[in-house]
Image (cartoon, rainbow, N blue to C red; front, side):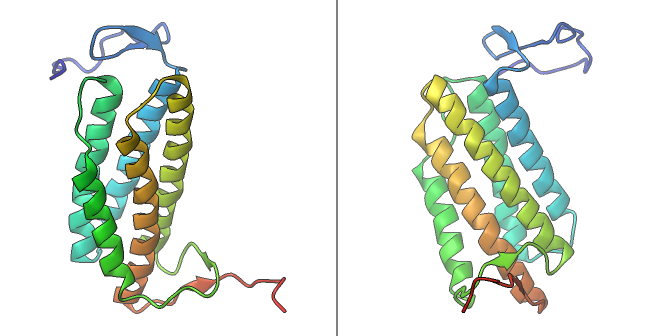
Length: 183
């Protein structure tokens, strides 16, 4: 495991570089560093959601997701670490299927909103899409484990369904897109 920080300001990053777990220093503009920051941002978005009154099942999964995102950050910093596996993906998929079984099929696109929590879940979903595009960019430069990209892709799906599910549980209506092209 990596070093524990006993002092928060180290001044080692003042020149625009940061250290990976193996001690290698890389630019803070490196896609790996940007991706670690985006994963951290996503984790923080989820922390904001969990600070609200949310469905217990959603909260339980979001707790796991926060740990998984921390694990993903660890894998990005310590490439020898393997924390995300197929069973984690399967758990997300099962949760999506369970929530979706209670939802009406979509007939139109929905707009983010309907409640503060649903809007925050959509914000986290869009952040997960940003993380996903950065994962692809990193993967194009240096091959990454497929489970990491799959997890983030599945997570954005989960967040979308969770936003819909939270609205259902609270009795709030979804906001449907007014399709101007519909005949």
